[in-house]
Image (cartoon, rainbow, N blue to C red; front, side, top):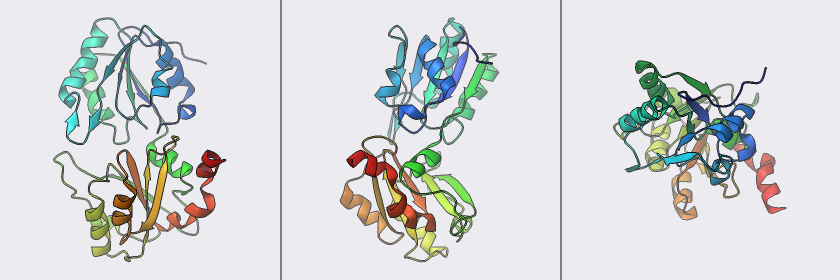
Length: 256
């Protein structure tokens, strides 16, 4: 059964995927086209916003390092206010809303205020960006586990479970880790991974601006600086990175 368009007074927490509009789910595309108000973040591409109705109210609520358009608490209450005014509200987030997207915090507020909501999952950055970069997250010969972590905590620190991350036979995917890349690489070596352990960083994955830099835990920080990379980026650590040169299909399509 196909569910209908967005309903007035309801908030839809929707994953927009990692950037390529072709990676939107059918449900996400339908809701974008029918919403009265769209509250979107800085990871949502213009091509995705173009799918909205011309009459839809669009509110930017993006977050970059040190630059938040709206504090999280105010954003949560904005969603409540818009819904209670009778609008169908789309909260559009890059990737998947429940994977480092603060989606859980936002729907908690909606639930506390009695606002009906629906969560529409999206292709998370880890899956989408890794696929387009030619780096399988798991592989029988290299990695039997995959761990997602965020590169900075709520207080801005990078206090991670280094012992749990610095393990062989697994892939570690780091969201929002560009600023802390030197610390990240140094800590993984300190806690037991070899200095020449493969690592990659991907900028604006799945979009025409995608750039992939591969190296090791020793070389990647300097390589990222030399390449002039900027957010948004995704960092992938593990032996699966060795497959990038062989499996990087998207970069071949871009240059064809």
